[in-house]
Length: 88
Image 1 (tube, rainbow, N blue to C red):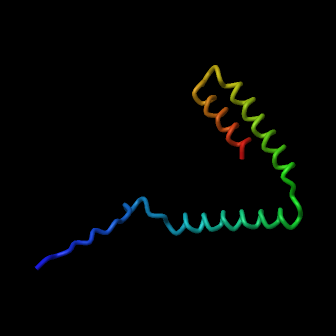
Image 2 (image 1 turned 30 degrees about the horizontal axis):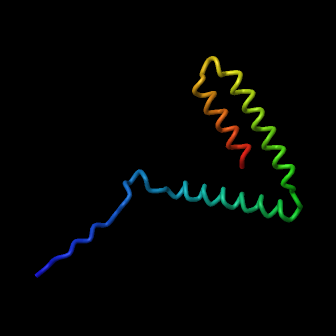
């Protein structure tokens, strides 16, 4: 007679999402959906978003340049984050 063993994969207790985390994710998703619908309904333009992203990226680059001498690694991370933000 043969026996079969089924190994169930389970997450460690601390890796499982809590009810609070799930509700927060649901809230964020709902907020994002509301913003998207609002922009579609009232005509937010892509040009405005692009100029805002460019301005925010420039502000971050200015800050990164100001701290480059004291913390070059963090400044490098900020420059990379500005590039990623601008490329969205």
